[in-house]
Image: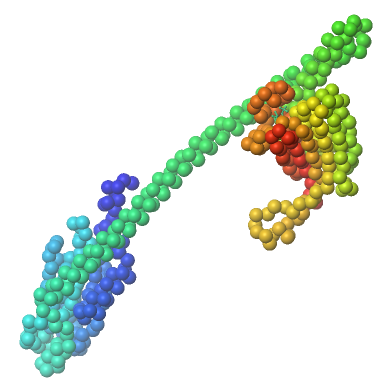
Length: 463
Ligand code: ADP
């Protein structure tokens, strides 16, 4: 819709532009001021406003059948009379009264007309013959009395009143039209914004579909490649292990060292490939969590013990801490161990020499967040379970990165990452495994002071 379309917005119907009540109000105030009956008709002849009082003379002639007919004829003529553009027509009634019919126009288009009257031109003194002879039995005195009660207006005054009303109505039409235009313009712009939004939404949807497809391809690719790599790798590890353990004969010191390096790098590679496969399974929802009773205290001590030797090489100490009596834990032992170990490994990896890594566990209880208002919080079931924490005294993670490190392959840019190596898969697996248990993982970190990762394992839902 363009501005020109709007300017031509349908202004041919008075009733579409102005409020009918406003029209009636204006007519009424004119009636109150001048005692002149006023009717407003739309372009198609519909009556839009009508303010009048029945006059004695009208009531009197309507008492006679011929009078009734003549009256109906006259009113009909007035109703059907369409004055030529810009012209005012004064239509006489047989009673001597007149009707003044004024066209209503706007921007050169006819909108309708209004009728002032019947009123008696002040210039008229006599009771007209047309009234006296309209029916047998008309009493000239009664007729005169009845006519006396009719408002008397000089034609010139009537003309000025009509003109004034005409201007007032013009004004109402003008402001009505302006309001209409504003509304239409507003609607048009809303429609346009909606269209634009719909277009953007479609584009986004397309992009999203494409990304999903790419993601699926990537997953398939990863799965295939990882699988194909694992088979030969198993042989490499097996044979290097046999060599290193002397099954194929004695090796000299250097040979022994090489075979051990091959095996340890092979192990590393296998762990990496397993991570990829795990992630893939998690992404596709194929990895199921098998909960069973487990001992959180034993778990945390065991993980701390396993992390000890590699940490010691860096001069890092690993501590386990159990806070308070713990409720029973039901979780997937392999997966929970994997999560804790992964976080612990990161903590050791990012610890400076002489740093301390602490693994801890404690009971927790929380009221489920419910945005529906305070009332519901009381009703919301409390979640309880265990909360594990892994803290280090490493470089910390910038706040802006804290949400991203749980994405697959994401690594905080900078020398520290390159210095420490890694794939960027660990935390994303941690995140998914914790979520699969219905828990949450988050990180608190201060740059230069260290990081603490927390994860919760809530009790199983009874449902
Ligand atoms: P990786 O350690 O193999 O790079 P992760 O998914 O485990 O992958 O971690 C992603 C990134 O998060 C790391 O590369 C590192 O930038 C940051 N990060 C993880 N743990 C820590 C930590 N304890 N201290 C500082 N940065 C960390």
